[in-house]
Image (cartoon, rainbow, N blue to C red; front, side):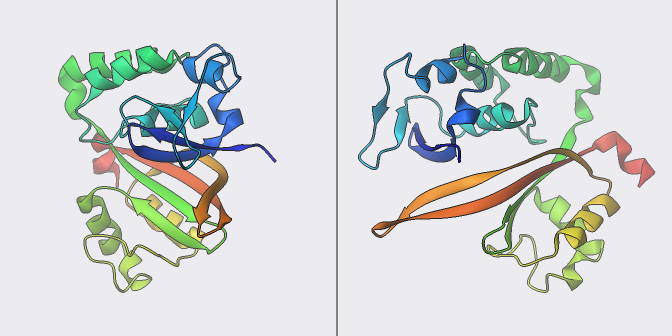
Length: 212
């Protein structure tokens, strides 16, 4: 099994695999985690990277999928460009630059909506991340019949069959963009608990709404 790595990026904690971090050997992360650059750890044993913690989420997802997926209301492209330049990951700087150029075009108003879905395959529970209006669309599509407590957010521990969620995501015009899987490990009391997960990103272009 691939080695699981804990990261402390600017105070934000992430868990991933060594294979993901070294996917591009000549990148900054590839050098750090192939022992070509010195590394430091915090008191919990997480590797410390003194960079922007929230933005690292997009760096890590790019490493997993080779695709840069940003929320509809993302306004930190210039800061992300700085992070991309630091990490030196092939393709990432170009993807951010393309995003910056697209922002300046008139058609930039046609933005993508995103649904992120993570299934804990150990407990069979979901974590869903998307905009409030997308949740409302999902509810109107009939998903609220399967999730009675759904209002403007999903319950923190959602039990739902995968095919049910995927069907309702498709009904409101979303298409599968990327998929990945892995293993989270975290400290609980004196023991280490492992959590297997599957992860999907669904996207919809605003200009596709007329086709729904």
